[in-house]
Image 1: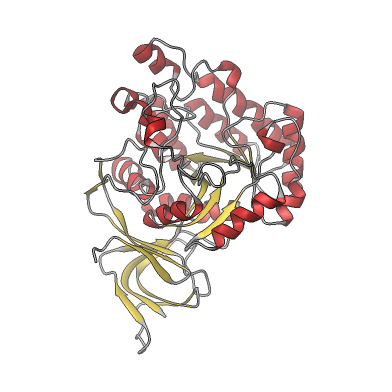
Image 2: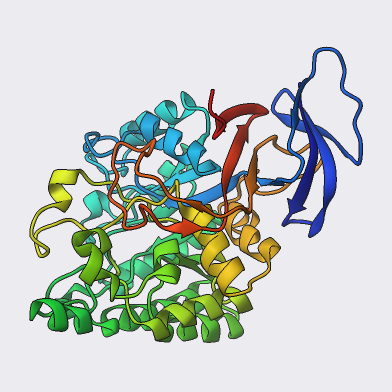
Length: 424
């Protein structure tokens, strides 16, 4: 048994907050009370002065396994997740081979079961991410896929996407969409304004995202599917989601820590470490994303953890891959940009990192109650600095050296301490 003593508990599902002890046994929470007397065989952890919340749930993660394990693998990715207070991840399907068949799906889930966290995965919407033919979605759902996505590649054929949404609605599983129209993009990973100013090149205009979201919220309305607009980056995109929700669409939207923390100006300082799809945009867009988080238009915070090797990121800008790692910095950045700077309630920020994503994907996670899963994160609110060392195989992030308003102290999954920042 493990007993957390004197922590300040925050449960986004019920809205409860207050000082409580939490007793865990055999992977479940068995008691929450103002005071719990420990038994002889109980491991006690005094977390006075610290915050106790459900283990974070990240539904947009790339572990690069199979196929690109020099960047990350399921084991190293799980360690990175644990270091960030994340106890459940949902992986994307753009591996090699793609998760569009039973064999690859089984490989990912079986390897995930060997880690210390909960590893779930989506399967691809289309075979081979080709955008021409649906993968066997019903079969893959029966074998454990928790959702569908061609993340990294938009689905351009409207009729095919509608068919996919109809299947997803029938299966009651979410379909997540990467919203960038490649026909409008000259060089990806950088906003058009910044591309012209910094490199004298064309980039990725905001219209590439807006046009896709505009189309897809209408299909969502027609089909009744749960649709997740991934890593939203434009103020117009936020407004389209807001209006679609008002019409009754089952639309959800993700904000990444980099999109609510940085703008296109970061490319000047961080170069390819600030290259991502969709790109960082303007301060007006960043503030619109924060407003969307504040009013519930954006109901998910997800990292889009995208590891790449140092050699790949050191290529010239137009040839370097897009994306940054995010598992180990997400909570700290959310505490800084959203809670400390923007004034969003801590409970609401945690809801978007725990209970909301778990609910969308029908996962038993993201809440703290007796009988519930013993998956927790313990964190502080003290100012600290993001260091250079990561549990991830990769270190492609612009946030090294940034002062942040809090950090993970312990991560607990299935009632076991799987990460601690305490020096041994």
